[in-house]
Image (cartoon, rainbow, N blue to C red):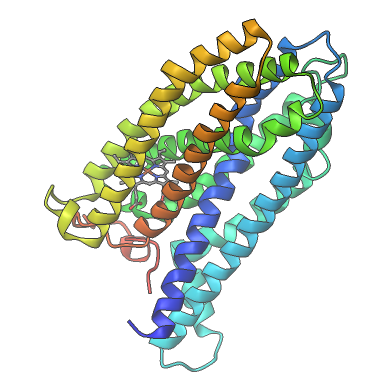
Length: 351
Ligand code: HEM
């Protein structure tokens, strides 16, 4: 592989991984807020947690803005790399033709569609996440309108759909199963991934400056709630991931003999790591947390939590990176044409 080809391949893989992670955060934050973060603060009502809520929502606002920027840049880079590839195939002349060729494919159109979706999300979310994401969760203030949450959910789900419809899922057979299964895989992946990010990077903002017995109450409440969410999403990810594998892998031997299969095997190994840490959390950390709440002490259990969440964060980022690589490889199951215009979508464009 020449330098240019390697550069393009690494660039596209990084761009895909960054977009997966950003879309996951933009969508997954909604179930996370409603199932984990808001109920945890509501439970602490009565004490003065206003400053903590403010710090958490300010941190979430910053992360939402970073995710919006990151996926806009990654999508633009993916398009430019694709223009460069087509231009090279067409003889290397600098004309507008490669741009039009890419924008005529389903890949080009769906990637382009991300920009209006991101613009809509920017209008809805910038300045508002700080104000509304935790409004009414433990204070007397008014909650954000239902329209705001629905708008956020619809646009961010649209972003996830641009991934599904521009990738292998769009040529899986039966098509409806392939697309629906992939969307469910993405939605559950987004919720689990965001949970790890929030527990690892945002939760400490919530407990900063509090007494040990208060810190451990917030920690226990969030971890226990997230552990149920993780149990459900990780189970569904295993099932939908297996269905995805059956739809895209030609045979068992492909798992060790092809680049697609080997990448998928590595991803499954990381998933087994997630299951192992999840088991430790469920059966050991939760028990320790309950004991710590009863004793009003947080030092030992916080150290334990830091270790397990750091491992989970590394696994989560590893899975996103691995998936960015996986989706750029040629799947090993043959494409059934079935009258589709699959030519542009048999895989995300690869160098
Ligand atoms: C924590 C667990 C997991 C996360 C966060 C995750 C995340 C993702 C993401 C973001 C995609 C991209 C979807 C797309 O391109 O439309 C994907 C695709 C996929 N996942 Fe997973 N996944 C997980 C577990 C699994 C497992 C356990 C398996 C296998 C048993 C699996 C197999 C696949 C396959 C085959 C695809 C399709 C790739 C392609 O388009 O060629 N995943 N996953």
